[in-house]
Image (cartoon, rainbow, N blue to C red; front, side, top):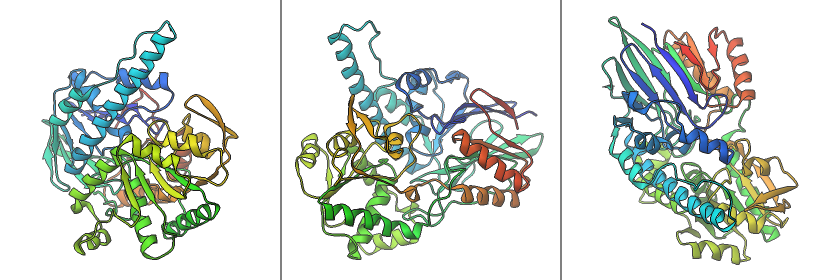
Length: 469
């Protein structure tokens, strides 16, 4: 029997995760993420998903991040009516995140269509990729499976989830394919978390893998030790506070924001940061934090101890969750030092753009980057410390201090990826490693490192490639 994998998204890039597995009897899609990048390219790739939705037998979703889940409503809108398998926490997170994505698209479409009409531009009206009805349809097709329980999803494929330790509910996806009375196991990592990260448990190690489809986001980099992160964060806040400035943190609403709040709670309790307001300025982050509170079964022992003591891991003195636009605008009108955590993580949309517009030109302020910034995003241009950056169409001088703390990343770094692959090989007949979800430099470096460790069959598919596994 021939098993194939077609790389539809997250091939030589870190966004738009979509991988199609075909067996003799089944077609299974691993993730259906939204492509994020240049507006025109993103629109084209997200409107044409690169596959026939009606030909799929099942969809498996590794976790809720939009670059892994964000095109599911589009898939259902285009005719997919089958099951979408994921964990309970991921389904709950998608209920918040996909509705938010639909609302943003509707708002963007209204804005752009008004501009087209006002300026008499010769262009077709903008149509959102999907709406809230499409989101409801996708959610109704989701089937939640617990970690560790094997479930047959097609006539010849069974699925088991293991904890990936990346974000709440994230899963390693173990596909057992029946092959003439024998089983062949394909392991799809989704995104792999870091050992020792706060709140969540460490990634599990799967056994009996024949094929490992592995993310490679940080395949060419090492993260600083996690034990130093809180001290670095405290130092940034202390010196910005001394200047009378604001710390603006563009943050992914899922996981990164909660990890930052958790760290700030510990620093506040230890007296390592001054008393100052901390604003979580993102309605989506507020909703996601509520989902975190519903799933303590995903917590590590330290986070569970906080809950058992009657406290919340996501509350601290001075913390304010803002919901209304008026509350958000009030933050910018105030001149007092504060910390502002706002979406989006790559500075491409959301309330963080308003805060950056008000703060980047003043050297007393700090922009703290705590996550990966893809190419062609405002976040990447800030990381590169461009002298001028464009915000809402206006170029502004980047005078604020820029601090990059990749140690807060929820992705395994190069050493952790190599150790993970080696551990999987020790636990099964691993023959093929397929690197996905990484930019070319990261993937090429990681492939070289894997080859040096004795991995003989390492594949890096480009978009559209078909691999025989």
